[in-house]
Image (cartoon, rainbow over all chains, first blue to last red; front, side, top):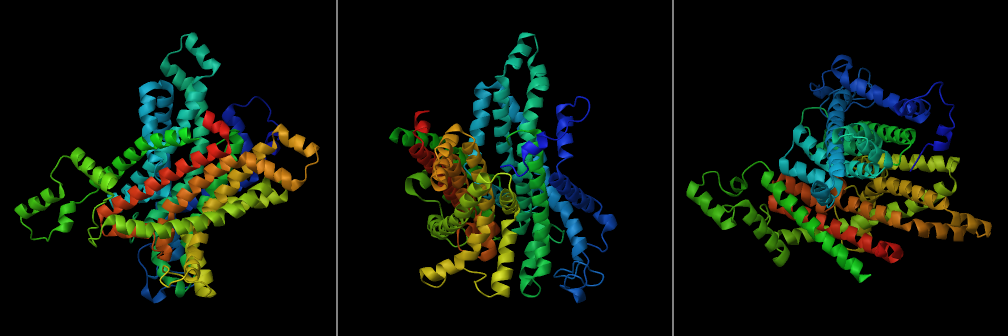
Length: 296
Length: 313
């Protein structure tokens, strides 16, 4: 499933001096133009979202009814205005804060918690493993989108509930990857050697399992970020996420949907934003997988 | 063969039980008192207690769960919708027909080009063709499908006026049905198309690296036959991803069905959520997750049919 060719990457001249694994990963990433562009784009969008209160030209909530649905390129409103006459550029900048927060937080939570649980289940084995893994299996009975919408639907709208439901969606997936990687690493000879030379459980987990499980878990997690963002915005699109008048890309897409008969292009903008961010994360994830030289 | 079917079925039972427990818990954890929706605001305490007792809501939770499960499994009774008072089973299976039709259409729209593009890219690894296919695939997986639906409406309904933007198959006839289904099916097919293309490419590349392919090539086998050999050997992975993507289309169609007002389970789920119609919500999710589990089971069995090594393991 590779987009860049690994052969080209490994043929890149090795830097002087020995590099650590992470140094090597960084070195490879720095030589992959597609990943660099995706990373820069994402960096700019994140920066825009973080700095929205400082750089946004207007207020995100106050609009002027007189200026409703100005087209793209209107003087003073380069990206037009929405159905309540609010500046689109401003709303998109502020919307990014919410969408990125709602999309990335659950992934971070699931990565941390799922990685931990997976390593524990894999290392301890036995009953703990059975219980953790069977519970994960049960969650696999639900397609991801359905599970997210069902939990959010039952709990009701709001950012907190979005974060909860998305964390539940991604947790079992990451546990599975971490568990599989742990079981695989545990059976390697050097772990047995470490144990034979007197290393305790804590030391084995800390120095042998975690570093080896980290790469596959991170690569897998990175493949899920784009889905998480599409789902987070999707929940708001359905009215289950952030509540109005706050700006959020999915919510903006929903409220502007009625206006496509007036002007089709302004309503498309929030979707373009979701699309670009999701694409950038996917490109970044592909680059990361190639650089880490692991099968995600 | 049959032992495989029986074994998988037995393995599916605890999963389905667990899933039903989650569906039950989901609604019990939901905020708000289910009784208050049913009763007029001036209802007295005694009246509320009476309704609670009649609905079995005064019993302990495990008893409620078992009663609910018994009614669902033994009698096929998922309760009545709070809003319409109609049996939930009725509404859910009525909607499921439309969702399955949509999921089948979009899976077909994703599978055929996905197979072709993935195979093409793998056979031309590293060339411009490969790069273009990879770009198409990554675009597919990155598209928010609800937004794609809106763009399709803008282009094909608002601008060109070729296809209907909204609504279900109100008119009779299969022609009208397909006419209405085309845009939502395309919107729903984009992500699976990207995923299938990527998986097919990877699977075919893996087979191409095996020695028997080299032998076939040395024997001078023509391209068509070579492709057939390779695809047959990569079919287990392709089948797995197809099953998962069909599940995505079935369970993930909520957003697309909402955009197009397509009268499937997703549209119904949206209604259930906003009317806080918990029996309906429970019923839809239970039926969809059961369908999904059975679908995965069917994929497992199919894989056993294609590759007898799986049966033996």
